[in-house]
Image (cartoon, rainbow, N blue to C red; front, side, top):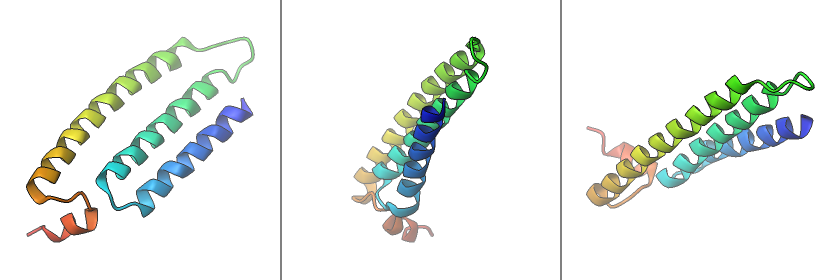
Length: 100
């Protein structure tokens, strides 16, 4: 179980690094996806905390979470495509200046 928690922490740190340092909207969306996957791995690893017992509720919740993450990613990609078509850039700092 410790290996999965360490993997989850590494993925969480990688996702937070992407959100904190990247300026491209595609990379930000990938960072969010990495964070969601880290949470799913953590949830599954803690569902097996009791030896010999696997909680099926955790697997069903993670399955729903994967479906919702796919939906959010699809909507995010659509927003990215329209932002690139309209403004010609995906740089977050440039798009912040367009507020008005």
